[in-house]
Image (cartoon, rainbow, N blue to C red; front, side, top):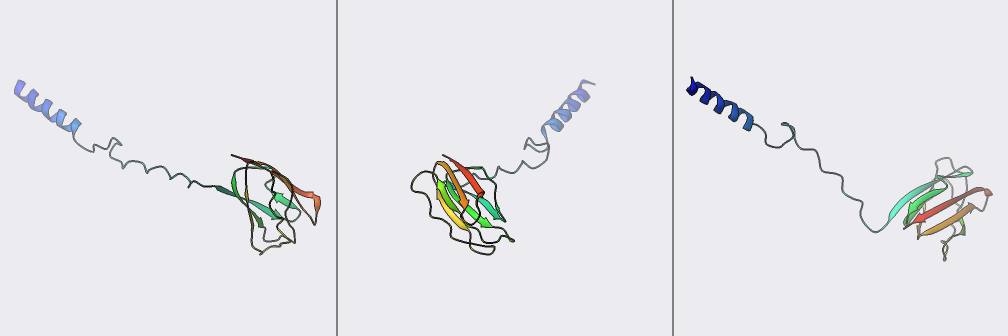
Length: 129
């Protein structure tokens, strides 16, 4: 009888130690996390629509910001009011389909408006380090 118990013990031990050794219950390990964004700046987009900028206010990391004219946008522009010197140049008049206006912004708070529509179409960006 003890001989059969010894054989049964060996069989149980072998069954417990066999199988997949990945530690994931026989399933493949999870995929690696996505890579970190590349260093050297960030970017974000503000949409210029009919009589509005969106989002505003906006808080972004230092780097590039893109102003994109919406598909139905009539002529607007971006003119800078306040911010760290030197302020970026104004965008010039643009409408839907025109190239985006891209500027690099350093740390600080910037206010801007559309020269055509005045204070009723304005925005604010807070740029963090």
